Amino acid sequence: MHIVIMGCGRVGSSLARALERRGHSVAVIDLAQDSFRRLGPEFQGKTVKGVGFDRQVLVRAGIERADGFAAVSSGDNSNILAARVVRETFQVTNVVARIYDQGRAEVYERLGIPSVATVRWAADQVLRRLLPSGSEPQWRDPSGTVRLIEVHVDPDWVGTKVIQMESAARCRIPFLMRFGTGLVPDDRTVFQDGDLIYAAVTYDQVNDVEDTLGAPPVKH
Image (tube, rainbow, N blue to C red; front, side, top):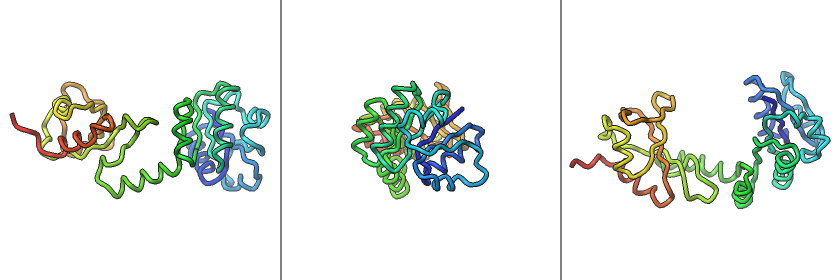
């Protein structure tokens, strides 16, 4: 894949090096020539001085053959403008923009531009480490209505079929983690000791699902 990155700060440079280590072709755009030093001497990709929403700059970075574009500069306006130019002018659909303003991020996601709201992401990461599993969602839709949560499951559920757990908690369990590997359960999958359960729920369901699976199963 060829990936174009706008912004060579700490996030952009780290992203560029990570992509290159995985064998991808990378071009990095930034207004400040000195910022490219963050890429290090081993970086083999392309660097382009300029603004990421300038069409000629984007062309020099190889946007016409790009498989993805990440706008991770320090400016919300620049990031979203660049993301829109890339999607609407160059028809690149795999676009992500970093946005500091959470309200803006949710608006742009509704417009079809995936975004990473820096403050919200950091807050969620801290909360996941402070609070019990499942208290903060692993993913949520822009409106906050639907979310994916990691659920703390009482050990007494071990040996129960996942389909029975779904019925008891009245939710879908799209996947679980077993020994560090994702597993999509079927009708025969049995919950084992050490499994991590992920439930797809609405906001109103969270407490009920956590209460049900966090307590021993009700014996009938």
